[in-house]
Amino acid sequence: MGGTPTLYRLSKRVASAMSVPLTMHWSLAPALEQRKTGDARRHVYDNAAPEVALVGCVMIVLKMMYGLDGKERVPKDEEEVLCGLPCMNAYLTRMEAMNEAVHDRFSSAREM
Image (tube, helix red, strand yellow):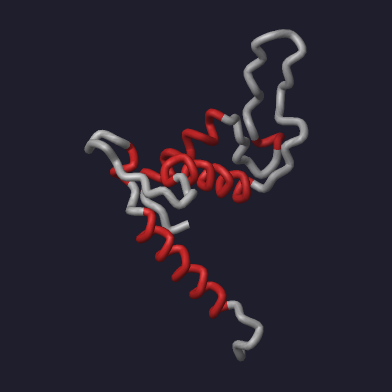
C-alpha cells in the first residue's frame, strides 16, 4: 500500500477495535472473550481473507486521516498523528506510480 509505519500501526489498531480476525482459518485464532452468556466463541460469518480485511482497515485509516473529500487536511501541531503520514498528494502520486508498475508488469500485451 506504499504507506508509512504509522499508517500500518493505525490500521492494526482499527483492526483490533473492530475485532477483525487476521487468521487464515477460524480454528487458528484464539477464542473470543465471552462477556455474557450466549456470546460467540469465534467469528461465525467472517470469511474475508486476512489481506482483504487488512486493506479495508488501511482504507478506513486513510479516510479518517486524509478525508479524501477534496478538502486538504493539515496537522495543527506536531503531536497530531497526521504528522507521521506523508502529505496526501505525495501519497496518492506514489499509489498511482505503484498501480502503473503493477499494470505494466502483468499486462496481457507484454510478451513473456
